[in-house]
Length: 470
Image (tube, rainbow, N blue to C red; front, side, top):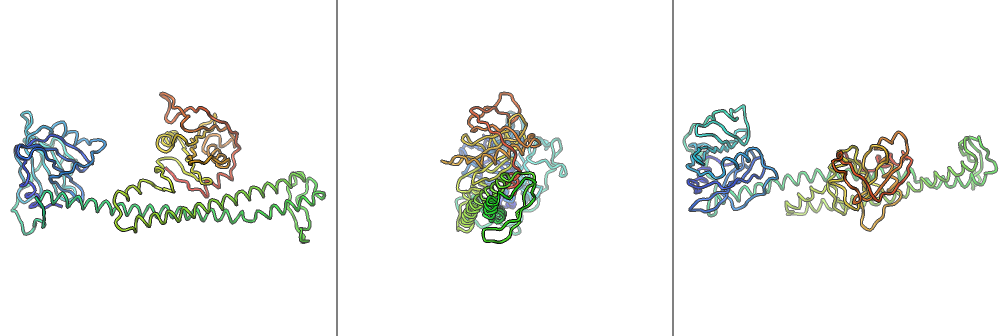
């Protein structure tokens, strides 16, 4: 933070009296640049930053990035201060405050800069009688609000021993301060980015480990699927003993050991046998899917661990690289934007996004969906949009399509029916309805699918997949 003597030195190096304010460029809520012109210096830039840990002002050779939308205070400066001539520059003796007295169109205004610590920092515009016209930060408790008379500080003796000017090198103290704070801000942003990246790493890797744990449990539970096939084979060999109405049957297995097989008395013998084969095939499929998913998750965990290690322990990593990494929440071999709304699931290596209301549906279409992604929706019922993210050179497996269809039913008014017609198409074939409700679209080139809601799929997706809230 600048002290009063450093402010005095900075002002003494600037050719301000008689110069003109040509433009005001806002960078964020706390900072802006004045584009100046004087006969001796010609065009030059003055950078101001107040109310931050690195608040300061100085002449600069860098025009910082312009903010997307100007704040109220900057709009006032552009409308009333641009074009003004600086008649005088006055610093309160021994204080970190100074004033530009401005003249424009016969009107006199004052631009007051306060580089105090804490809530005292501010930039204030007054008329020639010190009545406040506009402020960068409104502080009613300090009497700093529009229409009030600004209470000016009383000067005190310059104290160069108590507030020494920091050792500096270069052509001017202004250029030194510009370099000093540019470096300080960069170091601060780098430190903040590393801290955020550490937290992101911990969340992401913990999520992957939790998913590996859940899928491992699913793999373990379905590991004994071969016993179901053996039971079905055994039951087939004793089919002659079976009749409808039996709740169990006592037989000998292929090794000669006595075995009791539980049956469904409401089913016929062939239906009971088929039921065991169906259970076997379902458990076999669950087991194979779990093995594939485990392999993918373990590979991803290894890749992500190496990725973060390289970023956080790789020596002099550039700030831009760290900030770019923060913009990509979970890059898993390919880039994807952070999910702004809705839920995210994974099925057989495919990413599925689900909206839960009109606002989330619209957000997914605007910010997350791409033209080749697949869109699903329940026909004739209100519900969420489901987006299957496309993978290069890979078609969508039937299981992924069924998982997505079940999610569409689960997050719709058709859930109570337990079944629904689903229509699906690529996002590029959706058309927005003019003046329609938020998120409302009409599909073309759609295909139809009748689906019965499979609660087991929903439990698998919500239990082992990663579900993220908006």
